Length: 205
Image 1 (cartoon, one colour):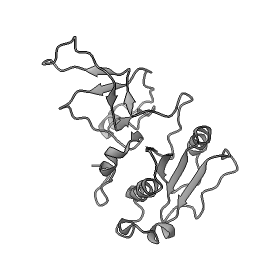
Image 2 (cartoon, helix red, strand yellow):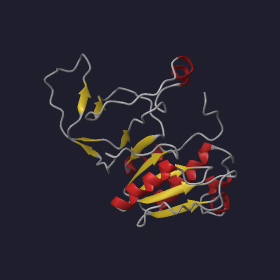
Image 3 (cartoon, one colour):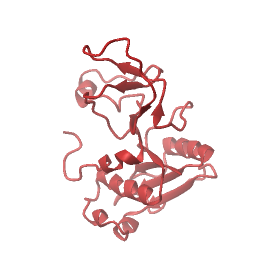
C-alpha cells in the first residue's frame, strides 16, 4: 500500500483534486491532517472515485492512540507529524509527502526505492570511470516548479516564476549532505524515523 500525506487548513484545492486523481489511478491512500482553522470535513465533488481519503480533524488527532498528537501545537505545520504516524500505522510500504498547493505534473507517477538510471555527482577523489549501479534511495526529493524549492533570500531579491528542466535523478555520493523539504518527497520504511518535523520553532528560520 502507498500513501500521500498533506496537512491543510483549506477546503480541497485544485492541486489536491489533481493529486487525488493520480492516487485513484495507482490505488493510493491520501492522509490529510487538519488543524484548528481548517474544515470539519474534507470533501469535494471533484474528487476522483477510487482513492481512499483519511481526513484527521483536530478532534480525531487528539483522540488518537499517538501521545504526540496531544503535545503538538495547533495552527502549526507540524500537525503533519500526525499524518505520518497514521500512514505508517496503516502499514504503507512507502509514502509521498507534498503540500495542498503543489499539483502533481502530468508525468507524476509512483517511484521505486531502487534508482537504476541516476546520474552521480562524483567527487574529485573518485575515479570518473566508476560505474554507478542500482542504488537504494530511501529518501527521494522531487522538485516543485514555481518557487517552493528556493530560499527566502531568492524570493526577496528575484522572485520570479520558473520551471525545472526534466532529467534523470541525481544521486549524491556518500559523505555529501543536501537540504530537502516536504514539498515533493518520497520516503521508504528505513527512513521513517527521520520524518519528524520540528514542532516548536519558526518554519521561516
